Length: 280
Image 1 (tube, rainbow, N blue to C red):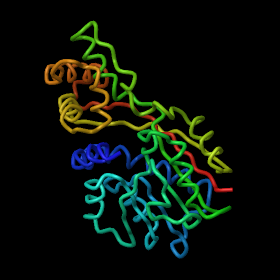
Image 2 (image 1 turned 180 degrees about the vertical axis):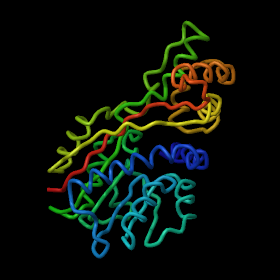
Image 3 (image 1 turned 90 degrees about the horizontal axis):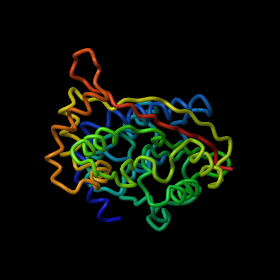
Image 4 (image 1 turned 30 degrees about the vertical axis):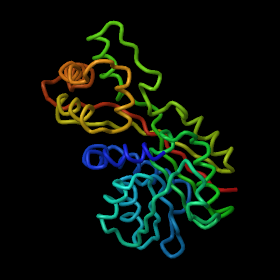
């Protein structure tokens, strides 16, 4: 996973300035579901794991929503974690953690966390089911709570695929053109994985969100220049110079997701699926 860690590190700055507004809203949806289903974390006793913390959007949300709560933020991309550390949030500890590997051999102790969260992480791992098993293993028996957010619907790849097809009728999108849901695509998938990991009292919800840009050109620039590994994966089917697609990508994005009222802003719909449950 070292190459992937480097790739996500490379995109850390762009991620923190553009994607965070989207994932933060998904984090709010996850905490809302948690609080309507279970008692909120008690700062006196809570010990929370934020797995795949990235640049710290969900860690910040946890810290501000539940002040004085112990939170352990972990990510496998050093530059992502460095950005989080620069926020100097109180009561936060951090570590490099590869969520695709055994968590205990990386220094975490089973049956110790009151809560384990991951937001928009597990779909990018080789085995989401393994990651959920590992997080469950860390939770306190009978009371530990697991909360996860995934993308259950994404249209992010559609402007790119359409633009490429317009420029090359023979273009075939790669099977991983939409990497947001290749191995876990739905709430039903997530709930089944929860039950398989030993999580009970599972409750889920879906929330529509939007990836917003001030213009179609801004989206095209971010898509092509941010080095976000998800976007790089989407671009894999284009055999020519991606620069040749930039103008058409902007045009298609405006046509598909523009407001239609003359305003420049584009809004690409996404759906965040959230599940919470208790360790048996």
